[in-house]
Image (cartoon, rainbow, N blue to C red; front, side):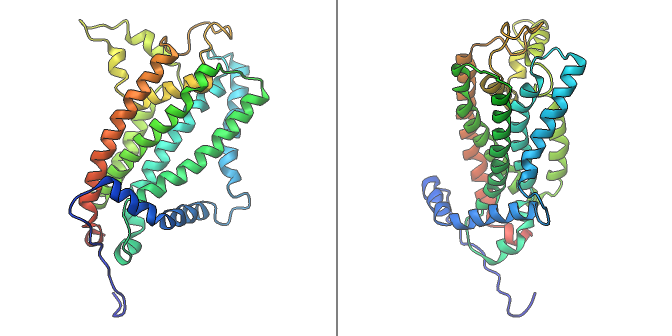
Length: 301
């Protein structure tokens, strides 16, 4: 350390008071916005197309899977819409978590030298992922408009609830992995493995109705295995995104078998509402953990 380099440790209040902390973060929103801008610039540095790459990703997916479904006669009608309506939400989660896990570590110099609410760091990770999510959802909606794909208004109404639930759930996990990875660097490696397994336990590339049909035939006493499957929060969120964007199409597009779960749109909305409330509780708990550990970040980096 150079002689003229000063290390400033934040003097955090002894207790987390949520409303006051939200005010502190809002007061330092320029730090958050600058971090988001910086990450977006770094992401596309020396790139001719810049943010257009975020748009090309879903375009390529749509083109490839449109071709595949035409050639193979896949049982899921309009499979590109089914896949991307859930995959884009999954990408928001995974991008947020993998960058949030390193958000404190990669900004070690800032943490050691500047006093600001440390929550800004994982928040910026979610912010960057949200920008990509908005761009990519726009591409999907334009594609659906171009092919004349219609979704009932009652289904589209689930979309805002699915997004808000996903964001709260993602932020809760982002606080958790960001805090733990400072002390235990194995967290980011375990996270990558966990996300791989989690992806295949979530009905993104296979019909969710198939899971329901298979699991509901495996009753063990009063236990419904499909209800246990729905304890996976991303399964519930994925079902919400499918219902919102893919729509309740069974019987409308000539699908040989049901594609979506047999629950009504109202039931799916209630599932998301319940998960939203649970995610709020989880956010409060992980935020408290992040707050408690943040005072030691400068020493541990």
